[in-house]
Image 1: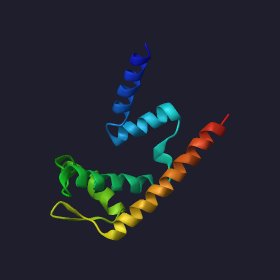
Image 2: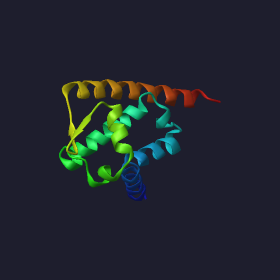
Image 3: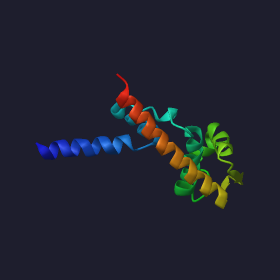
Length: 119
């Protein structure tokens, strides 16, 4: 029985981490934390688009990103330019992203504590 439960947990974890939207839903459902309310969430969405272009398109926007009306606005939020559908990353983009990630994570902790403290 323990193995069945372990496998179910693994399956749930995989499903909950398949996309960023899935992670947001899982956090809300299981931890009662709305990640979209965390500090710098909009910036983080732009950083995720940059990450996806680098990870899945070797720096070029993926087909899905090219078709999205949101991606150009999200990239503008993180001050990343596009050159022929390639992200034009600079060192200051990386530094700003690291600062954003830190602020976001600290904000998630605060939101989680507020959820625990709420009657």
